[in-house]
Image (tube, rainbow, N blue to C red; front, side, top):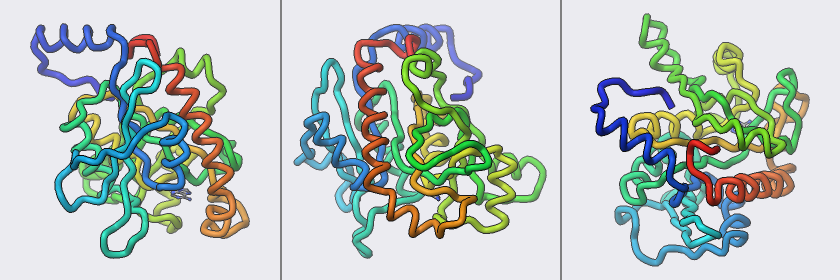
Length: 264
Ligand code: ADE
């Protein structure tokens, strides 16, 4: 994420030491249960019976040891009123903040599905590692507030991981709607995005504040600039694309195992 000014020499030293030691604790933030459960099974994680998070929040933590890693998958849970997965930026930012406070991860992975733009080369089932992340539904047409609204962040750089795994790279744009209004579309084009989700930029904002490295793995369930209605295509492809996503996350976790941040 963006470098921070005003660090003491000791803080700089500690940060560089952290970059050199093997990654030990990772938090994987996933919005939908359908996306999370295959990974929970793959890594043989168990649901945390003790309340890691404050009473009343729907977030569910699965954790365990996989190889040399302490893995936590945090599913955003079901909304207590409507019973559906609590997708979107509000839940995502809260859970990211709470997870960092409680679990102090070395690395955060946000894994999920996304819409893709065929004009930018996305196809159904593609798995992307996001390079840049920004919002497309925070339009504030006043100088400087406009840039704050877009909230552009960069993902933690992982050149070796990219060399090793066959993931596509693209810019991710986030908003709180599954559909795309003409205003959203103009902002997504301005963001130069290839993929569109509902959590990434919120997570990127929090990890930047708290200085935790994060990567964003997104699998394409629907083509936003195609002919099919988004909801139909999303539902049709969710199960198959989730399998692609989970395979990619497993490969990423296997690559991370035993490595330091500076080796990614
Ligand atoms: N997740 C999957 N498809 C999406 C889309 N088209 N927009 C936002 N989030 C998504």
